[in-house]
Image (cartoon, rainbow, N blue to C red; front, side):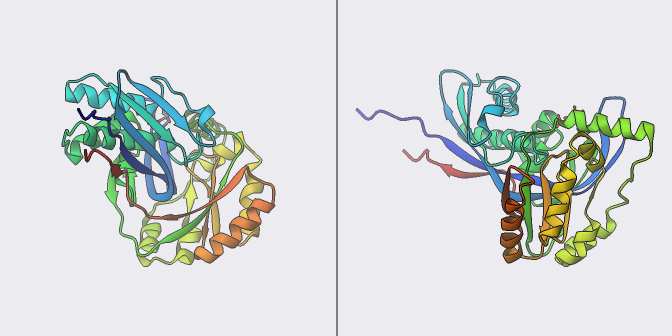
Length: 309
Ligand code: C5P
């Protein structure tokens, strides 16, 4: 008799950079109203799910030790949420191959949650609608809906309400990954503290950013990049100033802290510039490691559904 080996579903989900991040005031629910332009970048996590006796999370990759493998992992919570919708037990083994820096301001945990939703929807044959998955994603975290959609989008509310943004061509990025991570709530709290004691610069509106994205010209986009969380990330980790300076010295058009940091993202003119800037930045000794990426790329997608037996 043929024995049926459980077949995994594998989903790849992108990282993100906030090209423009305007943080409003603290809301009564502890969140801040955001107005942000996200772009999905070609630095990915890969999530594989397969039926098992019980729910488990296993993590591999350079930063694996820093990722929880219990119910505090967003992928675990995504599995519980979708199992509840499906009326079944969340009996799956989830394996996450990390390519996105952990606690790096690039939505690594959110990418894993988005990937898990897509993977389990496929594994269990649920056929959940896009709206339904969006609803689950928003419950899991502010950046999870964007990791589902990918591309370039304007995010409002906590960042979970999305409208696609028209872009032309591909933008090239160099990413400087830091030694440690920064906690997102701590960075938001630091911004509140800075705003109580002074008036840190606020980025303006994003209209010009949207025009530059439509033009596809990185030289037009470069001076418009901005992030209200950058002052808070630099206050918590002043070494990042050197990293930002080194990227510009290496020939980047502009650099900014990605989301809540500490990853620094540098926009460069083209792929050739990405290679030369990344080599120089790696030699400057201002970060843990350097990656080259491009965007926009699609959101969480099944890359292998081996259930063909
Ligand atoms: O939504 P998520 O769980 O990713 O948010 C993590 C934390 O980041 C929140 O608990 C909150 O402290 C902070 N945050 C915020 N405003 C947002 C998004 C996140 O203050 N719009």
